Image (cartoon, rainbow, N blue to C red; front, side):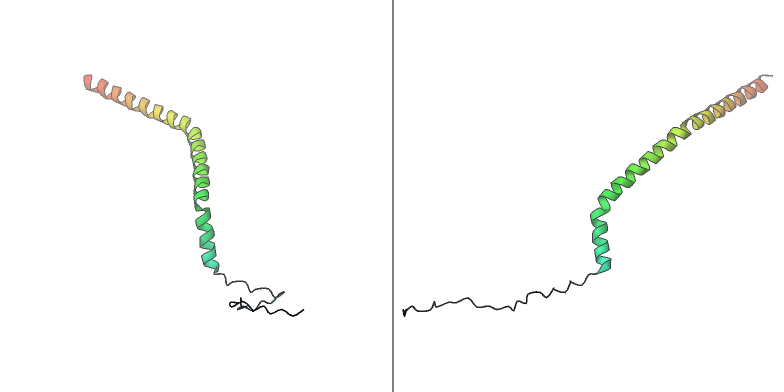
Amino acid sequence: MPTNKLAPRFVPTLTEVVRHGLPKAPPAVDRDQLVEQVLQALKPRLEQQLRASLQAVVEQHLRTAAPRMQHDMEEAVEAAVSNAISRMAQQNT
């Protein structure tokens, strides 16, 4: 059965060759740039973890050192008071 239909005026045209099965070549990667991007993404979290770790270490050190520091301070005050009393006694004699 013959048809007298006219072809559409604008027909889509294939402008790109598509080859199935051939993998695309991976894009070139700048190693240094990639490292920098990863570090920038991780930096806030790393800084937060570093601060938390350092704070824990400092607090532990202070808990350990505080009694020793207090003892040393007491000894220094006792020595200063004893020296002052000795000087005052020497001046009064």
